[in-house]
Amino acid sequence: MMLSIVGLILPSFCIAQTQTIDAPESVEEASNVIFSIITRLPSKMKEIWQNEVLPLWAKIGERVSNWWHSSALPWLKNIFPTIKSWLNEAVNWLSDIWKQKIKPWIQNILDKIKSFLGKEIEQRKPELKQEFEKEKQEIKKEIPSLWQKIKQWLR
Image (cartoon, rainbow, N blue to C red; front, side, top):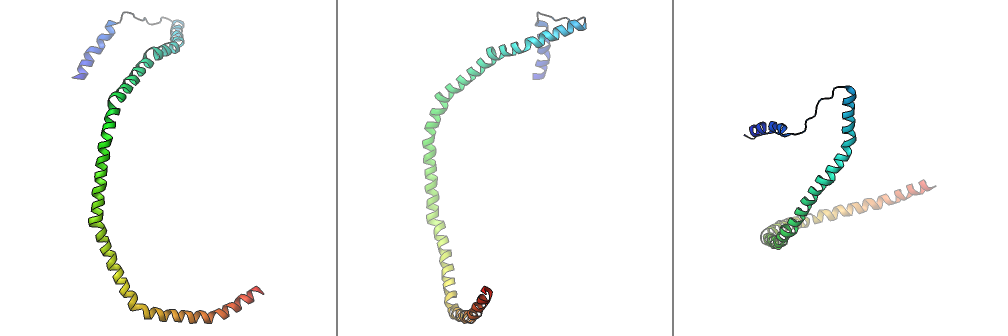
């Protein structure tokens, strides 16, 4: 639908033009036309930029600024306390879940691990003491020989 409207309306715009441009008859005339276009182009671009583009963007900026200060900013100022209260409620809810459900469950597991390890340590205490005594005796035997090696090395 849109394409058919555009296809019917756009060609009629060329009929509405009042000024026609004839094709140049010589190469010199063509170069003069091109030269005149090239020389006028920067000033026309500057004119379009200053008289049409910049004012349009200034209006857009002014409208956005007015919208921001009249609509968006007051809405945000009103919604932030609501969001803050929602976040506080969520934090309190999660804190309650932690305190009532998760922390006791983890504490129970840690208590079981501690009691199991405590029993294991008590069962192995005599073995550990024997191992410790053996290590002490071995170190006492090795120290004199180690000391001799250090003396020889320093000589």
